[in-house]
Image (cartoon, rainbow, N blue to C red; front, side, top):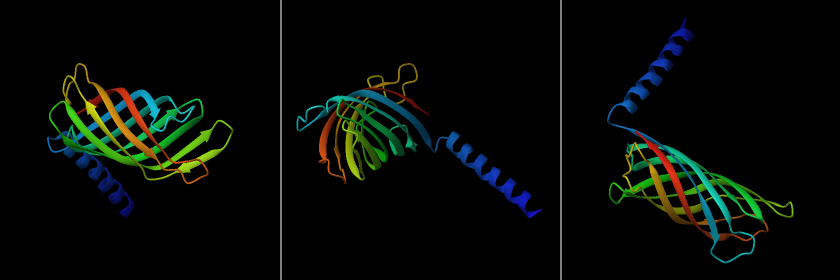
Length: 170
């Protein structure tokens, strides 16, 4: 009998959180980007493509906390990273600054070597030409920097990122 009560209480909590999120007090967003990554030290073979999928919740569509799955695809290595980020400092309805760090990143280099790192910081400025809450055309343009911290023989390295994205926010 107790087990059934706990099940009902658990569903009540889920429904309550969903109702709170649907009210005006909370906002959710999903943002994807694709673009180019440039090594700031000019390392040969490290120029390539970058992509990101992030989601989060916050007080509105431009401030909040979230998680991100990020990747780099270059001739010399492939990187996949999972991290945390904060959407903060909404300059206006069109510009959002965000920053975060990779909780874990794994890389495979051309020679078959693997590398891993943690706590690699990044900062991005994202511009929404039609506004953060645009429903018809929620496109974005981002520029930023990140520093890959590696705990293996490969050197840590700074990168510049430029991307175009698509964002859905409520």
